[in-house]
Length: 310
Ligand code: PEP
Ligand code: MG
Image (tube, rainbow, N blue to C red; front, side):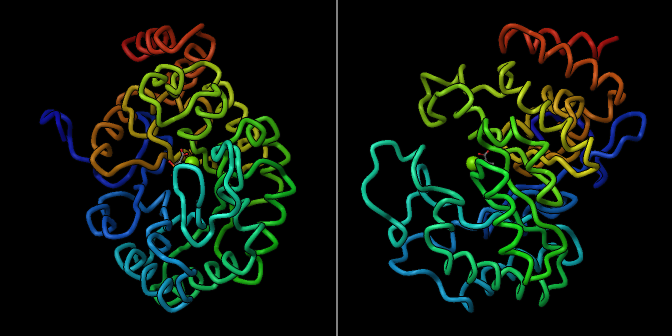
């Protein structure tokens, strides 16, 4: 950790009054072995298996790649995201006709709809790898925009018998219709990098727009709250696996808005765990309400801070 005074994460995320918040790692292949201090994996990005290929990897190739990650987390939870191709993650073998607006194009789960065999092969490989390594594999689809897509994905997963099936919430439509979406799946996970991009109509890759794509933007916080409320009403987990999860000042706010697990780069675990340990769940709720009611991101940070020094 950058701050030597921060105690190392002890393996169990919780608030001062004992409210559990699972602290998970984001991994994308070879980095899994370095992430095992986390409680599990909250986002396993599988794109690496598909990069630099002109046809889809075989089921055997995929199973071997997934087993490497699962082996590092045997007996623990690994949330696997199905292929998130397109836009900022272009793939040669799935490239369709040129698009004017790739961020709004055939990407994420939309490529799986267009290439159903790619999805089915990937799901079979994930199931085989999970069985071989005795991993608690949860599966989720990226860039889902409607409850109908969530239902369709859940149906595609059903034959494989995964422990849980979910979808990412990274479009404003999915957040606004969260109550309907959560009915179709076992859990949801907020992808705040994309959710902020689409909520603010600001490219996540453009540095000059970074203030707009800040997860502290009240519009983003209010969308997160809608999802937190829908998850709580349905009694289903609401994860968050965007960059926002690794911000120790924001983590208690997110928990107060209804997020039940945070998945981050492993280097952020110590500071996020310490930030949660220092506050009660009631303080998280107060900070979440104050930040979401603020007029802008700077004011949201300022509104949340005093709640924790009370
Ligand atoms: C996100 O969009 O927040 C996310 C976690 O997925 P990615 O950054 O891979 O798009
Ligand atoms: Mg995303």
